[in-house]
Image 1 (tube, rainbow, N blue to C red):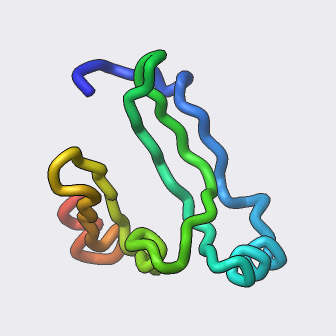
Image 2 (cartoon, one colour; image 1 turned 120 degrees about the vertical axis):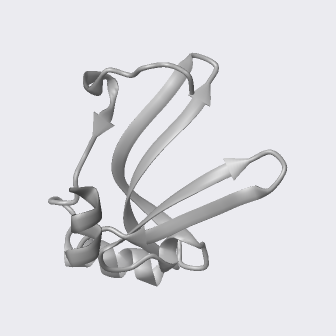
Image 3 (cartoon, rainbow, N blue to C red; image 1 turned 180 degrees about the horizontal axis):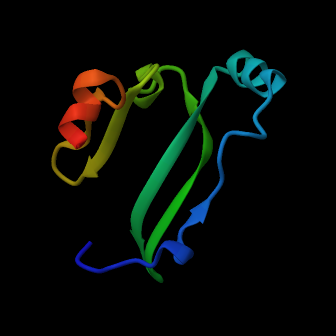
Amino acid sequence: FGTRIAANDIYMEGISNITQADIRAAGDLGYRIKLLGVAQRTESGIEQRVHPTMVPTASVIAQVHGVTNAVAIETDILGELLLSGPGAGGNATASAV
């Protein structure tokens, strides 16, 4: 986005308050709960947030499981692109170090 964002300006909420009942209810409605990080340009600037989100089970991001990380990028011309790969484990950790 061509600018720096202070970490204090990012809303963050983890998954510690998500219960099994929440997961079942989401599934009954056709959703999965995923911890998403979102960054988007708005009329008031750059909005960034991290929080649990219900996503439709048919969506590409709902198919990401386990230690796999994914980034979905919404583009004007190509639509949604998904980049995914290992987020933990021997090789992923070694490449990060």
